[in-house]
Structure formats: structure tokens, C-alpha cells
Length: 157
Length: 348
Ligand code: SF4
Ligand code: SF4
Image (cartoon, rainbow over all chains, first blue to last red; front, side):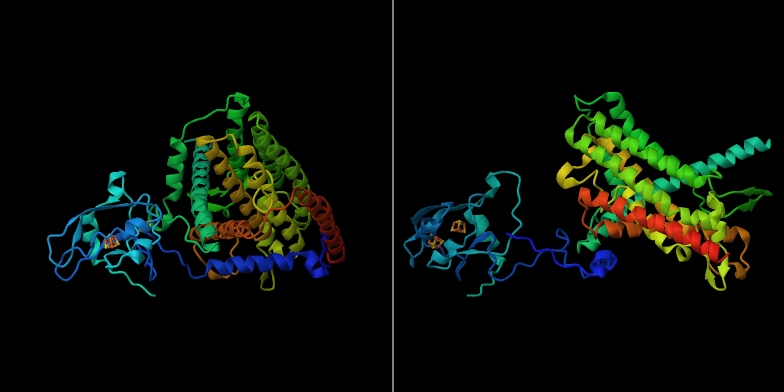
């Protein structure tokens, strides 16, 4: 490739106007509006459709909606959902999960599980602060996920 | 007490105050530089430690202090250890001749607000400023590391090249001022052309420009920080230095920066002179105080300018640096001397 050197006029070759232009640019940035969000004090507002921590929804009677159909566990690309089903104590369904665990260390938050779920039972919330100190703490159990129920998910489809 | 002891005590007080002011200046500069960099880049900069991040330098200091004192096995230890101390020492000593205020009359004695009133003040500064390069070269050599050595060599070449331009650029000022004593140079600048103060910036604009550029090169700052050059040389001569030894280089660099800002102010911006204040009949002590404040403000303006330049321009390439120093700055400086001479002959 041939490199074409642009022809410089005298004013470009003196270089000082360009330097002053550069200084002007940086000082403009100095007074610019900052977009920094100071994280621990200022929480980020997740955008609609953000995929955070899972939750299990309840129905109008306060029972877990999940019918233990294993759709989510099957579709899950990282195979991190572990469900143990048992006969449901209620009339309107056959099964319900006695154990429902998601290993969030393996989860990639793809949202496939909530798309696969026929009952709209599993959903991803806006919770993004999931740091913890032990590996066990990252395995979210059924009761944990039922507990995150108040975090509503704004979905735009 | 005999006059000797009183003089000695006054001198000691001055030394302590100036040392303290320099260290304080470095502390302020650390904050200004880091937060200024943040603002220029559209960030906030370090604002966590203390109000507005003002305690950041203390946190930095504690961190450096608590780091492990590490000496590389292949280094030549005596020089390796001496280099940072030497560098910092030179940096502090250079400031001694900078006058930061006018004479004050206190308890019947005249006190010069300057540590040493040397009659060849400028030569003193140049002599010591060029000694500073030894701290860098020795560090580069004794660390026994390729990057350090390259950094040291580059620094030596750069300092020598730019010192020529630096020295020649102030010849014009010396010709106008007819003295090498910094106080006389300031004294010259306290006069007026009708209303305009006779600051040297108006007489020697070209000299000022050359001095400014060469001064940035002398204190090894971007765009002339070839000896540090993170991308090619990691950080050049400082590669093998950590903990307090690194802190010493840090301190020394900022002290150099303050010294050169002060020198620019003294040579071209009237030092402690406040224009148009003579007619106001202010109490002499208050006036002296105001003048010191004016000096500090001017110095900080230039320190800010250095920060501003640092976060604006990219670094030179090595050959560009050399070509610029020898083929542009040096001829310009000589041209400036020539023009000054001609004008002085034509307009006595
Ligand atoms: S979000 Fe994806 S990876 Fe995580 S549990 Fe659901 S399907 Fe599995
Ligand atoms: S969460 Fe939904 S998809 Fe998963 S087992 Fe329960 S009902 Fe089936």
C-alpha cells in the first residue's frame, strides 16, 4: 500500500494552531457533563428486559406456580437447574417441585428457562448484585427464589 | 543573641517553610493531576478518600510506605539505592534560589523572601537541574535491566539536547535584564510601560515559548517523557524501583515541576509582582503577603498548564524529539537572541 502524505500548509507545519485546538478540546471535556454513576451509592437502573437473578412466581393462592415439567431444566444450555418433582398436594396439578435449585455460578443468564416455562413460573428479575463469599451461597434454592418475588420484571416483547 | 544566630534561625525557618511548601505543593499536585486527568477524560477521578479526594496522596503515601522494600538481585546495590535519594535531593536543592516574595521589614531587619540570594541564580538552577539527570541515568544503569538502561540513555540524550535550547532561550531575558540574579530580573519586571507591566512575556514571547517547551522536556513530562514511555519501556528507569524509592522519584519529579513553573513565573511573569498595586497604599507586611500569594497563584497556573498539556498531547517519537530539539528549538532560540540584540541596539 502506498502511503500518501497529505500536503501541509505553512500553518499546519508551524503546528501551534493545532496544539491550541487540542488544548481547547481537552478543556472543553474538563467542563463536560459527567456520566459516571458512583456505583455503591448510586444504583444502576437496569433497562427493560434486563436478565438478572431468577425468581419463582406464585399464583393467587400463594403456591408455587411451577408444575415441575422440567422444560427449563431441559432447555438450559448450562444445565444448572436441578429439580426434584413430587406429587402435588393440590387438586389442580399433578406435580410440584420439592427441590428447585439453580447454580448461579454456572448460569449464563440467557433467559431460555423463562421462555421455555409454560406456566410463567420462572422469570429473571432485575437483581444484579449477587456477590457472595461461599460457593454454596450461589446455589439458589426454591425458597430463596420464591422470596425474590417482589422484584417485578419489566418485559418488552 | 548575636546577629549571626538570629540570621541562622531566620534561615532555618525559611528552609523549613519552603520545604514544607514544596511538599505541600506536591501533595496538592497529586490530587490536581489525578482528578484533573479524570475531568479531562470525562471521568471523575479518585474522589473516594476524604472530601473531594483530598486525602488521596496520603493514601498513596501509606500504600507506598507499606510496600515491600525490594532490591533486584542483579542490581548494583550502592548506586541503585543512592540514585533516588540523589534525584530527590537535587530536586529540592534547586528551589533554593527562587525568590517567592519581596524584601520584608520585620523587627527592624530586612528579610529576603528567598533561601539563598545568589547573584548567579539562573546558572545555579541550570547547574542543579542538569545534575538531576544523573539520578535517572544512574538508576537506569544500576538496575541492570534493559528497559531501565534504555530509559536512562534516552533521558540523558534528551536532557542534553533540550538544555541547550533551554539555556539559549533565556539569554534574551538576561540581555534585557542585564543580570543573572533572579531578584534583579523580577525588579526589572515591576516597571511599567504606561499601564502595561513590563513583564518579560511581552518583551520575549518567542523566548517564553521556547523555554516553556524545553522546560516540559526537562522535567520529563508528556509529550516529552521518552525516558518513561510506558508502551515501549514499561516505565524506563523506574522499572526496578518500588515502595519508597519509587515515591522518591515521584516526589522529585513533582518538585522539579514546581521549580520550573516557579522559574517560568520569575523569568517571564514578573515573579511575585502584582500589577497596579503600588498606587493602593497597602501596609507593607500585607503587601508582602499578597505578593507571596500572587506568586503561588501564578505558579499553580503553570502547574495546571503542565497537567493540561500532559493529558492533551501524545508522546513524540524518539527521532522526532531529537529533530525538534536540534533543528527547530535551537535555531529559534539563536534567532531570538539575534533579534533581541538588534532591537536593543536600535531602541536603546
Ligand atoms: S438463564 Fe439460561 S443458563 Fe440460567 S438457568 Fe435459565 S436457561 Fe439456564
Ligand atoms: S419452572 Fe416452569 S419450566 Fe421449569 S419446571 Fe417449573 S413449570 Fe416447568
